[in-house]
Length: 387
Image 1 (spheres, helix red, strand yellow):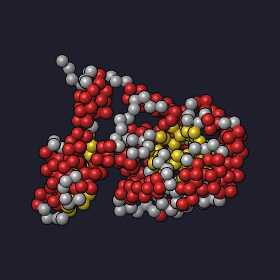
Image 2 (cartoon, one colour):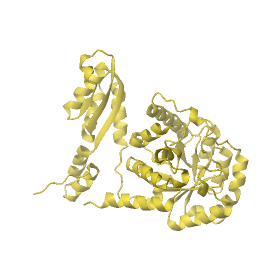
Image 3 (cartoon, one colour):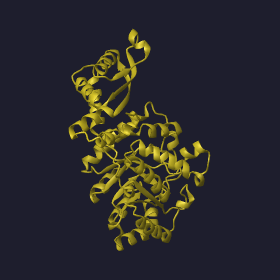
Image 4 (cartoon, helix red, strand yellow):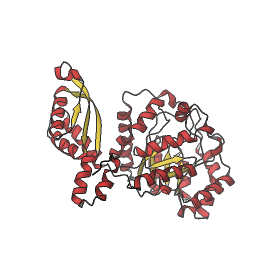
């Protein structure tokens, strides 16, 4: 007889390996899936009830030591429980007062939208390759002429990449907004080539724009995704997406690239982004659009600490039930940590993106495709090794 400590993420594979029956597999997996929730400003009665309910099923609700004295009206706490325990807690909260019904509903949403990370993922679909057709993108090697862009599209297709994001305007911090016509002029020859050569049948093209007219032009020429870095700030973008039945990337931001650094003061960043996503998703759905990818907007109206918090707790946003995209490739948040310019941020980018992927990202938007393919191959091999 021997004992080996295993990674909790491998519990499902190990239970399957010992040939447990299907019903037992589901039950045991729930017991090995640990969740933690930071709950703020719970009223004293709510905190006490939540503590009791959590303990009754084998979980816990950690509160400040002075909570037992009941001298304040509200307390923060951390709820810790397995998936099966949380299912019971959520049911009990559903019949409780003091705001616990809302907590129970939120817990249920997180449990509902908590899929297992597949060990057999398609790496080619987990990477979105960047092609910039701008003269001023912050990472100089990503700036492409028309000829270079067409060559790169063919190279990416040959590598098996399925998502290509083409940007005709820079959204680097401090950049000015440009008119749609200027974007269309930069995009025209490439878009015509994509349509005439039927390249949109081999790969999914995304248009990186905040201008509805540019999106309309690109979608007419075979693009399938709108990647709007303004967070659908312009109402006409909803209409364009609906007109073409497009998939959309909904990114959180505030202000414009020129002034977004002024909008980093949040009372609660996660509450703010939750509200932003909920409002925009409702609007998208009102136009019949439900093919949505969420992007928390690394580097957009966020400082370094906020960017790191979003990556650390990325699974929070899984409760919406949509895929998550992270695009931190060579950005300043990485530069400020490794203290290197954009040309020397590849290793930092790979580390940042791998952790994002481990924490719930489904798609990585990248400049360096080959290196990310290798990185995800290692990740996939470790997940599927079952040893």
